[in-house]
Length: 346
Ligand SMILES: *Cc1c(COP(=O)(O)O)cnc(C)c1O
Image (tube, protein in one colour):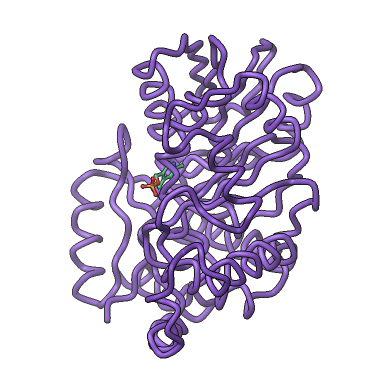
């Protein structure tokens, strides 16, 4: 099997092989999603998410189908007129574009790759990409704290490639979302939304109920440990099993942060490659974007494959001049030694 460093879909935990077998054996795959068994599983998975990801008790959790779906949910259910989108990469920009297509007045606030996201404007809703998977940058909690201080609005954060890998101060955001094929180390097809009482109050004030995935409808189901549609029961099962075996997030996050630092130092000091974002204050802990000449990028990806290693392609504007390496929890330190060795030799 090829060793994948792709930042999503990414390497799944090897235990998934056993969990899949167990899921089949347990009979959970054939139960009705409103049955007691399914509700018990959803309830336990919420409990484990709260415990392992250290999510405040007053924040609610709901399952959706993907992070992309959440862009739509936010535009539908949490926005009266306007939403402000600050972004420095492809995912943040796409989010802004989709929101605009849904008829919301978007205030775009693009910022430079190496800048911290220093917003001074206020808006009813501020949309941020906590970890920009396309260029390997992140908005740190210290920056988020400043944004929080100067806004009366809600803050929504796309944490698709950092949730379960970075320790957030959850209180600094009102709605956080992710899909499980990145830091959660699971197959694609399940999204997770985590939201504050304030977000819920806003949704109640707006009272938008025109869509199957209207936030209030989602919440009413989630409060009963059900879902607003027949969910990916298999993936919820895998998530539960995975959460049972991982350490609490603060431990995982400290480990990943050190490993990211070591990899950044390795690329900048021991190779002819460079980390795309030079500013250490905004470099991502979970996705590394490495830059070099186009020809060399193509070559190293091909060489890697012949060594059983899959490097991530560049994305968006950086498609040609970067490759990416995921620093997700399912990847082991030993696997990082392997990729480092390969890069040193090639
Ligand atoms: C991967 C990714 C998405 C899209 O996730 P889906 O599961 O395909 O909806 C959105 N935002 C960011 C930052 C991502 O990394």
